[in-house]
Amino acid sequence: MTENITKTTSTPTDAVNKAYAAFEAARQAYDISIRGNDLHQAEKDLDALKKAEKQYAIDMQAKVFAECKASPDPLKAAIEKHYYSVVSHKVNRKDGIPIGVVEDSRIKRIDLVAFCQSAGLSTEWAHTVERCNQLLTIKTAQDMTVKKEVVDRIKTTFFMKDISRQIDLGETPMSKTALTKMIQKVIDTILYADNGNGQNVYRVFASDIKYLLNAFTKLDGKNVNTIQTVKTATLHGIFLDMLNVIISRGDKVNGERTYGVSFREAKAK
Image (tube, rainbow, N blue to C red; front, side):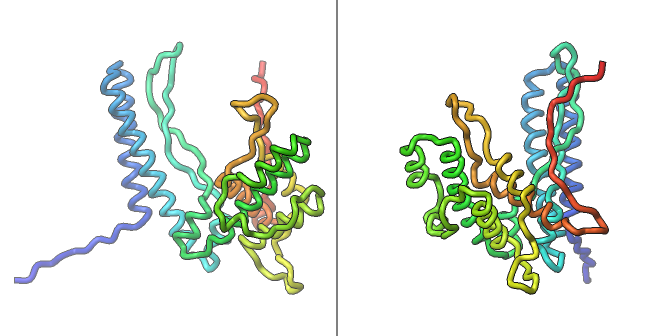
């Protein structure tokens, strides 16, 4: 007697749908415990909800990676995709008291290093970005004329891999021309297509440099009169943003992408 066995193949989309169903079940359970003011159960349900959100993010990343890897140019496809949406939750409150839990969402940039690893592509460019981070930090310090001993510490103790420290990107770029030249070198290591004249078709503009410099620092929350530069992983995201804009230039079908500024607006009276 022969048994008929039906094999089922799970796709990345199936995994995302399953993860969403688990998220929604966890959200509803948390909503019930919140509305019932069952704090002990709510704590357990919140833990389950966070785990469901994490799994959804993992499965959505796998889906996006699979779609980009199926493209003729996977790296360019990932840069053009740029980001994806994942589920999250929001607790509604009345007079400060939780009254319910609703679905929310947030944006995640594609992790370009993780994508390249998944697609079997080179990640050597990440070392170049790390070296660039150190030089930009030195430039930031020198622009503000901080003490020489601080600059020397950045040169010798900046947290980075040894292989990154050996990469030659030239001297600290103190002029606009030198800075643009260095950033173009970094871009060339990530995505390159010859324009027929030995140059990359993906060129850095002044607006890209300004975006980079504005995104590169923030106020240090622990030390007064101090600027903090971004971690290298964040700089990966900044270069992803820049490349996403750079690739779109001259696109007469989908239109060119631009940079933006967010701010707190006054409520209409």
